[in-house]
Length: 231
Image (cartoon, rainbow, N blue to C red):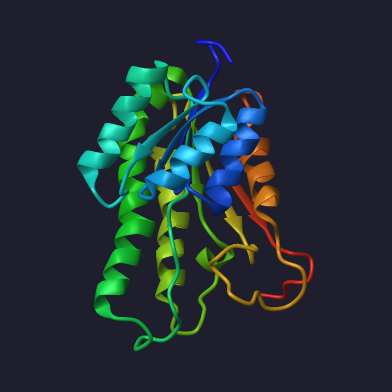
């Protein structure tokens, strides 16, 4: 890595898809800023990836604007640039409008929707300067509605957010991609339904595919399912 190596900010980076994206990015020559709430996991991942010259762990709750802005500021102070952001932080809920507490719903909606929006807001000035790339982690659930699923509603919002951001950033050189996976073998599912699920590395490859395109090519949406998934 050098001071000219591109820099990627990743939220929800402590495990799962976020950590897989970080590993794939470093393998492809990127430096990474790892944002999440669980600092011990971030520190361990940063050490695995090669230490401070390659990976910067930043404790960040994406529902708190001051923390998200501080993450972007630390990225610029430490690495000098932001070339991509992956707004990946998010989690799900039980289906049914009586299945979770209102407090749990509030946390999920703030994380999945507001958190993605303020992550974009904090990084857009630097992305505009670098003519960089914003990636939002959506879901197949963002194009269909699960019975009683408020999680689906949040991912519909992220689908719309990606298109709204694409239009807002038109003419700046910043590209926007929605990556929307189906069932992935993560902690999201205790018992994934039906067939072999996607692996986190499959999703990471999709992210890196979008980022690897030449500047005149914008991959706006990637929808991916396990071959045997029927919904």
